[in-house]
Length: 417
Image (cartoon, rainbow, N blue to C red):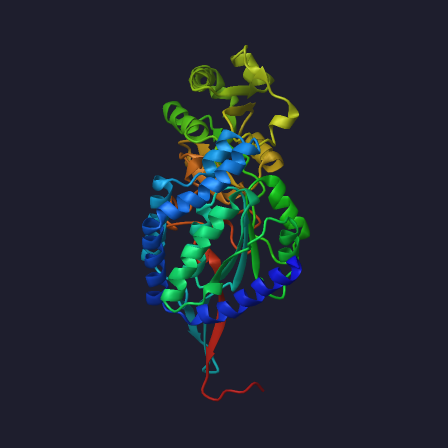
């Protein structure tokens, strides 16, 4: 039965997590380096298994963009290998002691950073994510159960087999990294109910998948539903700078969660900024949908409708609203935003600080593109995903965000009176 299989996987992961708590950096890094080497050495095997998934994808009528995400070629495998080596080179957060304080009664009280335990990672399409997530979880001392999409089952099982070999050869339990070996949808529901074994669930994929996980899980979920990211061009903005930032935020990679979806423009600079900005967007293939005040400045713009404001287009489509000032911009972001990423373009210090203080998103930027909400770009080295639910992390989750802290206390016989 599927339920028995999933429970056994979870039990094995729980047991493996105990061993991982004891592992030092040297052993974890050795495993990561061996994994990186095996990916290159066995790339023909990986590509062969991946082709089985690609054949089924074509037969099922999968879109070209999805097939592209599913494809593992030599370039992608090399990037996966390099990613593992980069994780190995990162500092190990586990065991870091912080804030040691001596209490009046002589007790020394501090905190030490520890793994979360067992992570359930549920994701779609991209088999390279199997390796990325496994590497981050191993380095942070967590056992991981990987449930990829059915479209990548052969690729994921092949990759897991290579990773398990490296674990075994370095003396680490193979159960530290497990791929759920079934395409049955029932497996996800069973996994979400195993709160006795799993410490956290991280879903990565479309909004539908993430909402399903959040609604049905008995295990805490770290998630973000979508990225409705805004750039506010203030009246005190350098308009040339604003144009470069807004163009990058929308066009550089429109299909990702940190791309700008709505551009807010102060009314006092709309006439000087919007005509050339909209023209540049159009030349890049962007469909611009503007409010009535936008249409007053650019008459032939397509009119925006209410459903455009909370939309995550993930495409070359942009909603534009002209606002009367900072307060209207902040109100718009509060109403339609997704707590993901927002930016202000301004040379006014007080305006920038107000924006930083009042915008309730995981990353808030001044005079920079929303595309910088990325673990690597923010100095984390790598990320397993972005969390907008605030507990227990807010924003990109790197190695440190895959850990927590516990109190440690040193005494010399103290008792409580």
